[in-house]
Length: 238
Image (cartoon, rainbow, N blue to C red; front, side, top):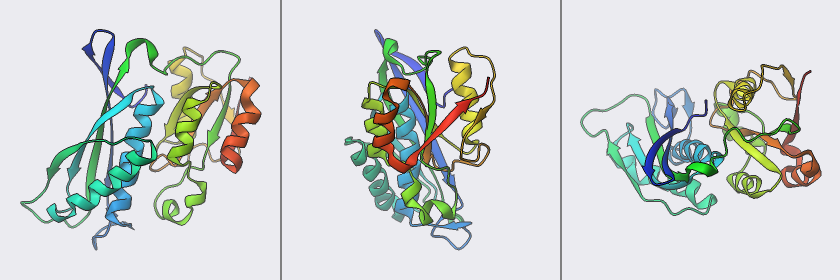
């Protein structure tokens, strides 16, 4: 099942809620991976916003849970705003900061809230004749900062979602390509099938540096040109 919660909101409209968290990544001595706080917030917001966009929802607001320190609030908001800007969104931000106790590691959570028309969800709409690809490489930890050239940019995500050839788009998280592939099959009522891809199927995708798409084969060359060297075909085995 997709990592988005849907709740009835209005006639024919549902709330869509997606979240991502980060821990031990930041600027504190106890962190496992050093990264600027703004960058950490950017990637957490990127995941949550991609999840909403992938199911056809429009983000309306963001909730930030800041467990780093109160003085980091504005810095973290800048990272969230940067992710929103890349998707053409100007989102209000609310939330809370830990101001009572000092923490030895960085931690934060980002929740994105949006709306989607019940009949326009991009879930379970992949036809039998569709083909599949991974866009971007799955990266985690220091590799995220070391290899930005292999990260699927949010501008490309928006282009893919606007393409008439793309059916579904799923951010690839820490469980890897193969897990998201099985979720895509399940959402479309398909039987389990193995797959092959030039990328490691079970490696963590970290903060969704790559994504899985199902698409109309007639548009493959268009999508390949759009994604360039970030396009990696995924083949379903018989």
